[in-house]
Image (tube, rainbow, N blue to C red; front, side):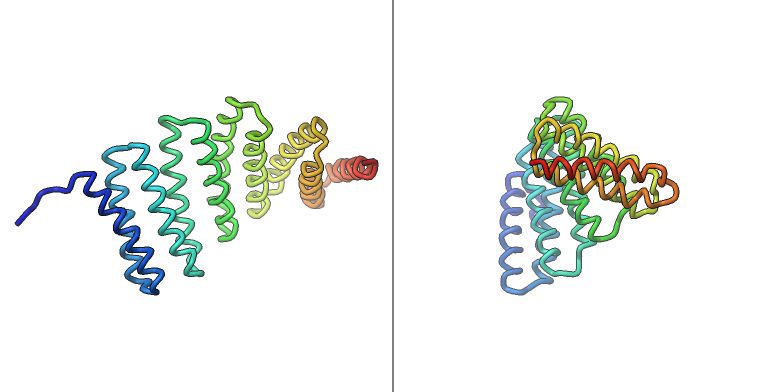
Length: 240
């Protein structure tokens, strides 16, 4: 009996075969077999990456996770399972960024965090949304510190918006107010520099979030402030 262990190169070939087989089985409607095949592929990809920690094996691991998450997404009623695989993708990308990373690595991680948070919101998993949005803000600040571009500042703004939304859903109005007003300040600064209509619309959105939130008795004293901001912005829009 041959007990020789497979080399990593042999494992990679086996992995590719399983990923192709899993897709073929899914296309033919053999969903149970496809699921088992894709899960096996993920285990092999994890095993290889644990041993090598190489960039090409990380890419293959992410590909495996994407394929199994897509498989469950296509089944319709498994968004909680899809979220689990998205979180695994974020975990792998986060670990890699903590060790070595380019600016594009940070952006790729942040894009996957955004996808995951949208899914958490769909799953009404606001507690995990809060935790992940907090991590997102940390990575976004590291990226923006290096680039100082409006394009990368948007990641901080979006993280704060997610934090505001999650706190509002969890009935934490003061915390929600805190994050929404941070978003408003950043958007105001960008808008009055660029006078961009899309940013104006984003600013209206967050102003109305703040206006609605200040109907709450704990934030009532700020209600008139946001009424005035909306009025001023509408005047600006009409003047254009």
